[in-house]
Image 1: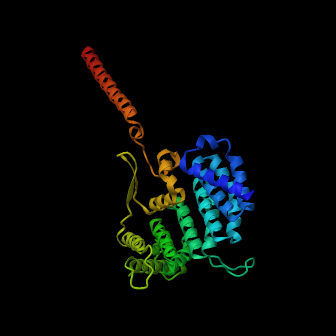
Image 2: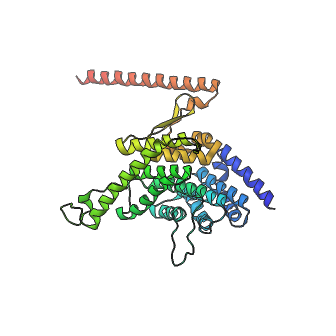
Image 3: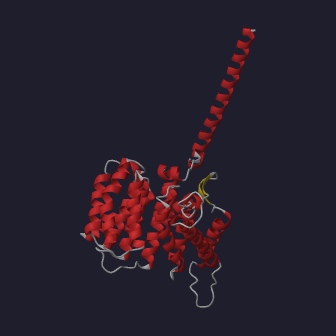
Length: 373
């Protein structure tokens, strides 16, 4: 029965969030994945959403490696089909989040990442074609989710860029979304553009892209340089306006302060190169997660949202997240009071033994020097 499957999936999702189940699922992930994919294909909207979430959590639990790569490969067709058929909005949002996570964790090369990025972009900016009927426009919640997933996955490409021409149209379209009526869409587009700035996707020198050695922007490449410069100025102007948007009578004040803060950060980065910085306590006094770039901040916010209440547990115990955010746990802080004493006394004993050993070696070297003389 569907209700039984939904209840089972909800319990599994809860377990994946609350505990690190790596040891338990290591030899069972293929069976679980097959069942999850079947739920996406044949189940109700609620069942499909839970299954998509379960696949994403399974991938995070498995961590980088052949198992998570298989998870990505096997789930990709079903997730892509959900996006291509424009299913229920909640089903599409769950599929977008899941596709972003499984690709982030499981992709082994750029080509695999590109396939998922394209699937997301087709939701963000659908186009008409010979095999496409009426162009559909995504609803604001779906559009915001697609932008967030696309941006999260884009953080993995580093400083790579396909070529300048291929980025002009996406960046220009993203800039138009800064004027969208929905605030969540505006903010998601703003984060995407901030990342494009950080990855230098808008930075083109006229000498680099002109057709001759003069660097004169008379060619199509030179025109591209001018277009990108104009686009940068336009984005900076829009960010400035959004960072100071008024909340007057009748205005939508929901998340207004968040929008102002985000676009002020974007403006500071575009104008002065100031990177966003955030920190959060993980455990104890010394375990702190710090981010100091748009890529890191976007990854942090996405994982926090996707893992929900399970984020803290995973960031404390999941090696994947510890590697992503370069977290080095203070072992003593995770122990009981009695175990801390034993642990720290062991540390002190180890330091004392090392000190004695160093002194003994120094004396031996001194004695050897006396005999040499």
